[in-house]
Amino acid sequence: MTRPLLNSRLAEFGTTIFAEMSALAARTGSINLGQGFPDTDGPEEIREAAVRALRDGLGNQYPPGPGVPELRSAIADHQRDRYGLSYDPDAEVLVTAGATEAIAAALLALVEPGDEVIALEPYYDSYAACIAMAGGTRVPVTLRPHEGAYVLDLDELRAAVTDRTRLILLNTPHNPTGTVLTRAELTAVAELAVERDLLVVTDEVYEHLVFDGAEHLPIASLPGMRERTVTIGSAGKTFSFTGWKVGWITASPELTSAVRSAKQFLTYVSSGPFQYAIAEALRLPAAYFDTLRADLGAKRDLLSEGLAQAGFDVYRPAGTYFVTTDIRPLGATDGFAFCRSLPERAGVVAIPNAVFYDHREAGAPFVRFAFCKRTEVLEEAVSRLKALSA
Image 1 (cartoon, rainbow, N blue to C red):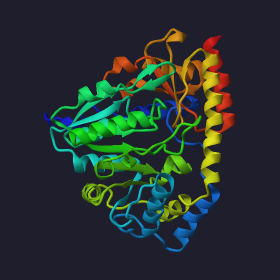
Image 2 (cartoon, rainbow, N blue to C red):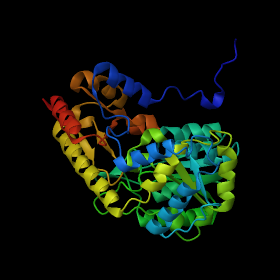
Image 3 (cartoon, helix red, strand yellow):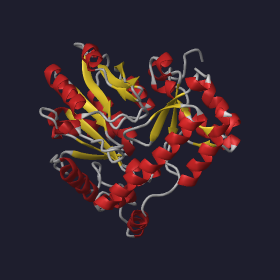
């Protein structure tokens, strides 16, 4: 057969770096600080809620296409109580198979072939693949390191908008840089979207993981944005049940209907019993979210300080559970080579940030570590990484 089997839209995407590095961690017995998944389960009462749902026959068959009513109501209440955003659980909430499906369904539904989609670079790798599957053209706007953090150049964002631009794909708190876009930055993005009549798809899965007084502000809460924004949330990062794959969108009835039209031909439905459990999780008291944030903040500090002692330049994140580092103080410039040699050198696995860039050279000297691990695991990783500065 002479014709390539993989269609041209996906030809540039091979096996994800996460699969490669997780396999490397398993093969070498290294500590995996690459892929962002916790190494402990979430609250016992939520796990028991899933067991109870299974035993009671809730969700063992196909749940409703938009999601079970209990979860849709809990999502709507969460958006209202946290952010003052009012959504009709029947017309403006859609449950998805994690945030990844929500992103795919939103882009497949809203992007026509040839439309331009602006994404903040570096970006989660599925963004590029989903834009390609929708036939869109991705236009990266790069967050650049400045004084210990990554910042958005609003002039560069404005210059990226053309007559072909369909939507802006946001991510805040931002993976991999840990940036949390400020009210001023989001207000500028909102004003641009209204002025140029753009849609916004915003990935807010790390909404509860913000530190040092940083504020997570949904862009949908800003003037003129509710009717043009698809907000994506997820249970995995907040409740440490990433394998359950329960995500959602909230949006206007028209946007929700559009995304549902694509979603129904992807998974149709998923995670039946787990939806009931996550409905209970979203109603946990504020103390749960405060404790989670404090725990991860302490782990961020532990890993950040250890990385600095090992010789990295460290960009301390304001959100998410990732730390970006610069490897040049260690005499390295190629993140891929560095990460592939790190297991042998220090028994630790990380992710090269270049995979999150169109402009690979811009991300070449940066490496991402995850700190959503047990304290003793992070302490051992820090101890091992000291070998780099020896």
